[in-house]
Image (cartoon, rainbow, N blue to C red):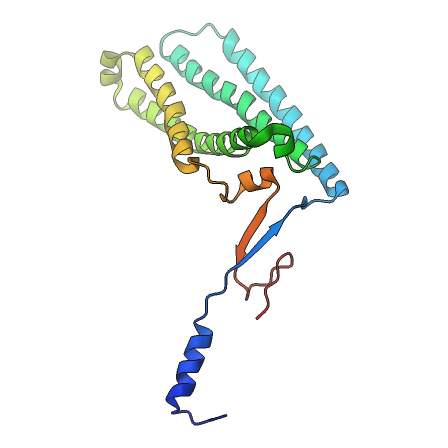
Length: 214
């Protein structure tokens, strides 16, 4: 082998070898958790679900009993909608996760439509809604404190109804935009629901599940 540092062909060979792009695809058809770990996660998820539902139900009852009027009633309406979203979206997804720990693939039980709704639409919508809701509260506070005269002219009830609609419509639109059309080769939660694990990785990275070799 020519060890001359000025050898042009040697440099070209080195460049060609080091500039290779490795892309590996690993597809598995088995669950990632053993029964013991799945049981532990199910117990934890069930405890979180139970406590969460009790808290949200208690908050809803308290808000519903309040005989508020005017601005306070409008704010209460905003929190009631938030409370209802919490009581339906999050528990449904947690229940889906608990079942997915033991029944695999979930597509055999809920179908492709169920996978799309439970693992994509519901999860992404609730995540985006949870991010947007604090922003909604900040906007409401700004309008009621800084722009109080404009708020009164526009109408408090009308304003809150508009904000409630936007707080639901915006994350829903973002969810649809991100997830549809759903390709059969899409990665992420939908593939997990269908029993497909697709992992793209760097072969130089130490991955115990899908180790690459040079």
